Length: 134
Image (cartoon, rainbow, N blue to C red):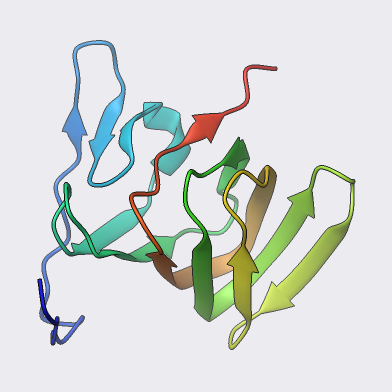
């Protein structure tokens, strides 16, 4: 895919595909627990197998994303809302709209959405997902 030019406001949300075991099939990520994205609306820009892996997430306040890591570096731009971010070293950072973050592949983290959030998320490659088993 040479380029993508898309108006995100005109692009459709994807329909969650729930598997018989209750997991969700997410483009680029594969299978995740269904409770991970409860109430979240998602748009995906790219090809699930070949990328690019660009997502627009609308996440309601109160959503908690449990400890996990990805197989690819990621860049996040928080367009709206507020997030409380925690890394494995216990460091907690709260940030709001206009914040750009970069996370290196394999870094475990978790976060909680404090105010309804709109997040533009891009991965350098297929994101994959490594959920903690604790």
